[in-house]
Length: 107
Image 1: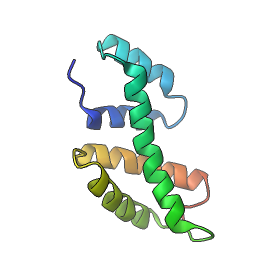
Image 2 (image 1 turned 135 degrees about the vertical axis):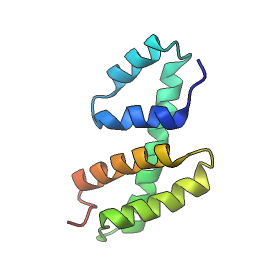
Image 3 (image 1 turned 60 degrees about the vertical axis):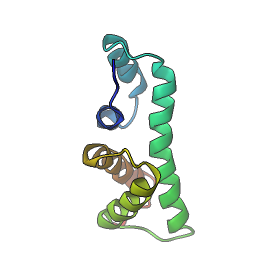
Image 4 (image 1 turned 180 degrees about the vertical axis):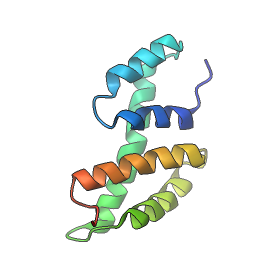
């Protein structure tokens, strides 16, 4: 099966936590080859964006949701040229959730 990473990013970010088992079941049902490698690659895409936001907010700066989306769009457009609007929005949704969980989101 030809995999669209943008679609898979959407699948990955729906669950936020405990997504690995569902992703692997989807990959198996969809005949995706080497799903472990693909899952690791998608997780790395999420974490790279988070680490970028972490660096620009330390030691004590927080970001609004709009700032998270703006800064992450700049990062992802420069780093992953293949990423389309669907993939970007999926990762941004995850980033806002993660930043809120870790105290980076300014409320």
